[in-house]
Image (tube, rainbow, N blue to C red; front, side, top):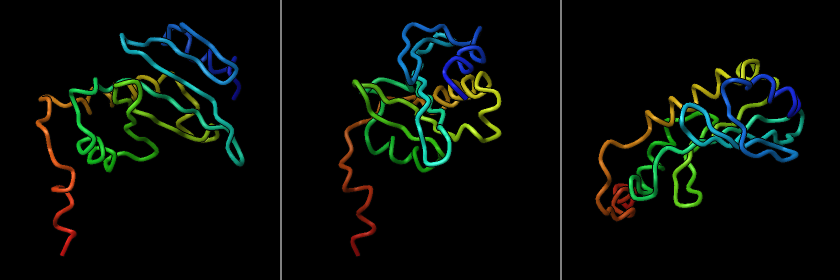
Length: 132
């Protein structure tokens, strides 16, 4: 997969606002999206990111807890936003249809958004049961 192929496959789903030699930035279904093709040992990886929520809406402990539910995905803090990052090898079944993958990414980000802003939590308290 190359960037031009990816652009054609995402046509009509992603409104591209910026492009680099390795990726695209744009919007889809009202959400900001970052997409990159990253070289790996044997194949490129398709890496997609979208915003879950702003910094005040989720704390680091909650993002760590939710990361445990994800495979090939992570919640990352960037520019005062928590973003959902999904990375898959371009030779996998999921990469056959990047448009469907992008829509699944947006749905997943919406489902991970907390309904209530967290109160201040001491992260040490979450791991206190390991102290013994």
